[in-house]
Image (spheres, rainbow, N blue to C red):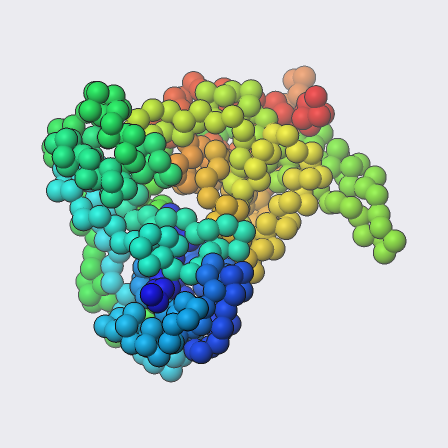
Length: 468
């Protein structure tokens, strides 16, 4: 029986992908582990390997095709012993044919992004149909796997407002007359599985119905594309279509500011000792035979380490909000915003509290280089317990940053600059850096946020404390 190769979901936010390149042609044999395609997601470019032996019977989606929906048929694999032509006719019949994009072709006007659903929408809707089979498993699963691990299950951009459940869990819940929206899922990405339904029958793990959600005020409608363009004279602008990364950033940050109650705490840090320590450490760095130092610390490396240690010393702030309960994290996984031509991405330094400053520095340089080359794997940027956004190199004094869900905090760091400071009754010049902590008020209250940024200030102003 032929195997349908589908466009996989490679991250929780991925809805479409670009099929950049095919490494195999129709009629060419593949072995398990062969790289057969290169796919661009909204965050990275990744290679994919065959997980079955066979022959490429038909390529449905040509290379160079953009915006291929997740679970779209992209190719057909004939298993050993099958006639490739017969396999292509049987498995590929009726599959949508997508044309590759061409630079000369006109770009359609992008539609306005849909307004995020209101709180509780997913619980009040009728139970959705079971999801399509995963491109990496199930009946007729696709012969693809991400290098370094299988692709993640598809997740709708609406996140928590869509109910994710296994087909078995859906059937059990329907038989038991239990609303899936009230069951807390314990599977991957909060997916409801059979044991969750069994627990719900005993009255465990059930959420309260979102009765008050319908009374919530509606968000003001945004302008349509036509209304926006009508405000400007025809020919006075150029329409540049959004790419996948920019759309994802827009959706996630819009959802963040509309669903997370932000508050902000700003503090000034005297980084005179830090600057002196940085210069001394960099000067003492060992060099290789070509004279290249083993590391070169930046101020941001100290900021990452200080935030990681502060979260360990104030563990109540190292949390993520979920409807079922608070996720209290054991480690400090710090995301660091990296600017890209199409937007930004936050690769993560895992267990940052356990790493030396030199290790953080070298790992951050590697992550930033791979981010700019769009070579990050999903595990490099998904998750995290807090983030750092530093605009000091642009001369920005201070700013506020938008929280990256499901994190509860993000630290916005400005430039270190000479400012007047009062010491012992005298006005002196001091090297001052402003830092602003954005907090999710659902999980981090004002006093707790103040405690966290206070510990951060103490560590930044006395960097030797990071070594204790």
